[in-house]
Length: 469
Image (tube, rainbow, N blue to C red; front, side):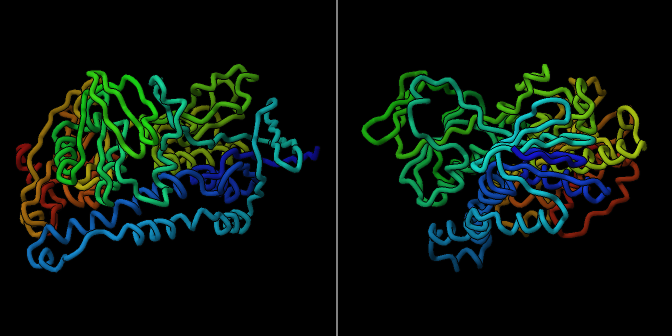
């Protein structure tokens, strides 16, 4: 068994771990990065990139059909082989050599293998060549991502169903697909496969996209149904069986749904099992961390991204990684003592107040900050202003454009605490909302941010006018 000492050990070489390691190296410390799978992680190969690559061709085709003149030029349907080939390009054909080169060029030491905490700042990595004992002078960072949560449905564990990995890396388009789960991944992949030619049924125990305002989720539901997706909402699943080479899903009312493939997309949870947390008296179901990612019970240990369990979004995990990396460097130099100050360079404060998120369905949903219900739960004195998106820019963007917008205002401070848009291509409106919330721009100053005409951004003017400005 070999032994190695470094300043910091980062476990997990996905986008989050890479960002943490890069910030630490930039700060002058040495880093060993440990990864058991592909360098680049879930987002690069099985989540963000391939799923969006599957969705984009259908959205582009639908956009062309939504405008008179281009509509008449559309004579065919999606070429699924070309869609899958383009998807493969975005995943680098599941080859991580370019990302490995980046790690080396950045000055990070990469070790392949399974990591396990064996004591304070001690990590053991095992692979086919044996084991390596690592000692960190300053910190160990857990950036191990998340893993699918599989519901305890009778018969499900005995079958070779799809998870999101299998769905985003599939080599063929199934004739029929049943999707269990009405969250973001379930909705996105249901639409992607419906547009690629599958007969899709989506089954959700509750509503569709329940974490978003109902008016926004309803627009997505209409979009899915237009694409031929059968929605069975507020519907329980009793059991799943092998029906002679097909999946037979028995619903709580006795109805049976059959399909060639079954996709289970019912959420994710931090991938903390098998890391040896129990030996440190830590619960592998979840860790208590501050805004710098530091674990309360062990100040040398950090968790970032999905592993921290706060906001399971790649961009937010990378944001956390930057804060954590800088905090570790600052603490190593005696420049940071105790919890970091909110909104400082060492605190991921936006996790609580200003998370931007996109549902890449067609139409899209984008949201920054808090919903009305979340803000009220936090004890804020808030008001809600909402309207349909019906401005010159939207009518030019697509014939019969349907959209919805909402802003949530903290009435005590007269600042935005939440914004939601739903409609075709509203993702490009999101960053302005995020800036307004993070910057706590007063509404009377936001009134002077004039939206260009004719763009969909004019909805900002309409929201502020309806609010009373």
